[in-house]
Length: 288
Image (tube, rainbow, N blue to C red; front, side, top):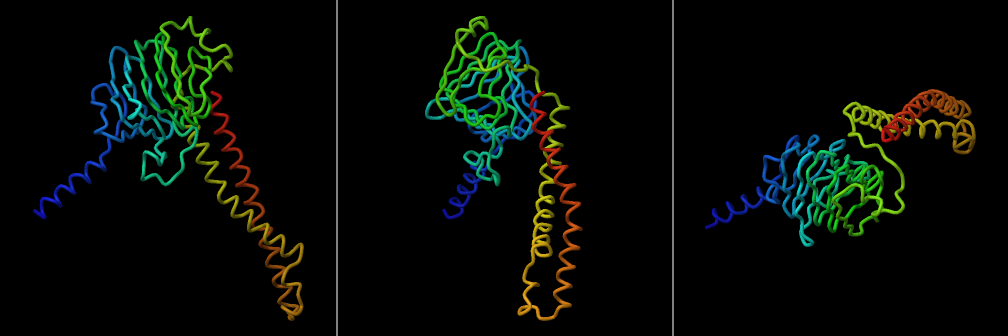
């Protein structure tokens, strides 16, 4: 009996830790909550002429610079009590192993192409992406969708940004893009409709890596030079004759901090400049 209990515990532990890593065409697999969470390693897509049905309770965790491209038919069949979730790999609410906080721009989003046949989203959450859902589709239905902390916008149709409030249920049902003007009286702006190219993804990743990587040594060198500057320029403990009665020792401390300042200043400037350039390029990459 004791062995049976341990066996059942082992089976339940294995099931609770189950996960499915996916990439490419997802139409040939069952998309059910038993496979949760679905870890999106690279871009996933639904080719033209194919169909994917995502069952209630499915959770998709997208890694950086990945997204979903819909060229065929997509049916998202969530329920109010058990919605389908599209979110970032760092979302601790659905990935308990995450050691980072999720942020807008963590993954690309869902792109619905012009050639897609039919797209229906029911009861879902989409959060921490770049552009949420970007649709150029002639027929799309959204029922009770929750968009949260997406970077550029939550939802666009025919290159027009639609008014969607953060974390407020949103619904829409159209069959013809010519009716889009009646949906949003005040579209915010026109947006580009191209899929993010691999070149831009690489540029964005390299820029972020360089910017963040150089920001750390820039901060360390900057703090070090600031401390040294404060000691040798503005005075410090070495100026106190009672604490340091030996004038030679006071001079030594002064010279050490002066030399340390001039040694740490150049790398501070270099690393700071590279960090600013990298992070600037990362921001600019979202304009393409």
